[in-house]
Image (cartoon, rainbow, N blue to C red):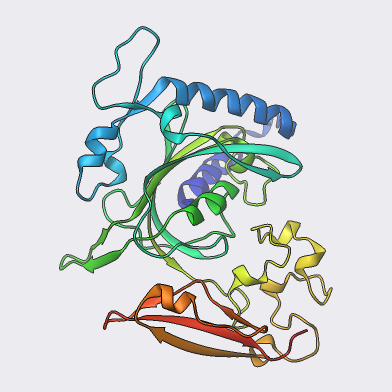
Length: 334
């Protein structure tokens, strides 16, 4: 999410407070935290009504050779009105909702896959480069990035709203890209879609990164285009962060990590601990990294591994058309 716009909002609040006269002391109402379960019911009702009454230009969009998210057109059609030719109801297009349990709440969210993408798939712990437009169910756009040219900043999927952390790994990055002479970059066969999130998977106030008050209790919609991914190693120990999610819940949140993500019990989750086992030897000195190159991705994935080895999910295509994978061997198995 774009923090610059959110920061401006906070600055405006501060300026407004400071500019008040001494005898005009504002009354600051305390924020009452809503019940997550009750809010989720309201959000899902709103999202289902939106999906039932809104359509997108499915036929025209599918006919475009290299579409962008700006090509996605959404219209509202009420009962009794005719649906324009080539438009598909969003509720039909998204299909069954995705499900997850978060903070003891059974959440559902919807994903519209417009294009899977031809490149790599990021994990929940990686950095991504993406174009996006975020808006509320009444159509108000609150943030966007890269709608004209691809964005230059990266998003760490461990530091964004949970909806992003869950949805982006379902897509692949661009198949290829070209640096243009004007300084822009053109991407081909990108991962593209829309996500429809209840506020509990977005900016609900007790979420770690919840810093935008107007959006706290708002279900959100994002159009997005996944361009690139970069494997993350937050603590620089040679082990990608996604492998240090020991409990397998697909989340790395320092304020809410579970004890079984902390091997040595020192209060730091493994992905932020350069000495995971607490033996005084850095983890990067307890592993061996090797490369293996094969003619196809499938052959790389089929390489036989020892009990103490793992093949990383990031497989690189070389200029000669072959593919290189990375194998980590854990010499110190504790």
